[in-house]
Length: 395
Ligand SMILES: NC(=O)C1=CN([C@@H]2O[C@H](COP(=O)(O)OP(=O)(O)OC[C@H]3O[C@@H](n4cnc5c(N)ncnc54)[C@H](O)[C@@H]3O)[C@@H](O)[C@H]2O)C=CC1
Ligand SMILES: O=C(O)CCC(=O)C(=O)O
Image (cartoon, rainbow, N blue to C red):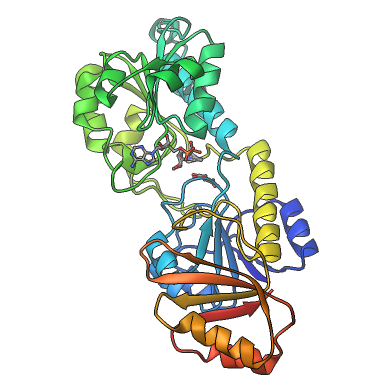
């Protein structure tokens, strides 16, 4: 198992991956631009925020699994991966507490203007009058948009601070809201209109791009707080700037539209920086989250080694468990599997179990066959030469 790790990952994960028999290339300095040239030998690619483009996936001749050592998979070209039968997996919920902690930190920092006050102190300026007014959180309404792992974790801390918590989420029902102890909101605008603090926790995608825009800001109370720790693209930055100017919205942001990559140094939107309390996409960057993510990455690789299928696959048509042995990635065409079975039959190898699963888009599939005997190199090479076959690996 050749594994390329193209972002920071804890030492313990490197040790554990080696113990699983993986041969590791650890190159945390690689950028999205470097990846296409770096990926050719890798069977498994592990990334954090580094973008995995269609070009990287096309150039990864041996690639069969991409692991997002985190939650959001908008940085990976899922369509290209799916069309080539490459698994993409993530680590759901493993950094949720860390991000929720930062969301609450940004809320308090925006309310108390902690960053501005610190900057003044550093300049030798004392201004109790300017910084001595804040709304406070107890009894105020915290509205969560997106009750996934992070949204729910943020809601719990909000409750512990004595806040009234409300929520909008696409599949939230009144019953579920009751069970979670939050006020049910039937639309984002309604949710925004009752919020003293609006905290955004949506996955990025074409349906959520700029979902938090002018209409939402128009619905918010003057002087309310907007916190975004999800993805920059979910919030319309131009509309946010306008709302900051026109109605005194206070913003705490960890993520930005077109934000720099992890190894870049320039933040270009100085206008925005001057208006907000901001952090550098560090929601998941705590030791606790890094350790939880790292051990989940190891678990994913181990499951993949043992069964040919990773945990938490995000690009499968349907989620299912599978077993090891001969793993065949193929285009979804008539006759490919029949030819594989034919080769196995002529080698007198019996198939005890077989599972074929199709990738989203319907162009590629992966078939795992449990065999009663090991195919030798001649048999494997016959299988690999079958038309419309992408890859055949013996596990
Ligand atoms: N600032 C940071 O360092 C971090 C940021 N994140 C971001 O936070 C996001 C949320 O993370 P989790 O809560 O762990 O993920 P999750 O998968 O548990 O929750 C995602 C939420 O987005 C909603 N959603 C997804 N697609 C939607 C659509 N088309 N329309 C409306 N709602 C939609 C889901 O219903 C769910 O409420 C991630 O996708 C990621 O982009 C995640 C971890 C760290
Ligand atoms: O790994 C990181 O630092 C970013 C985490 C993140 O944004 C995610 O998990 O979606």
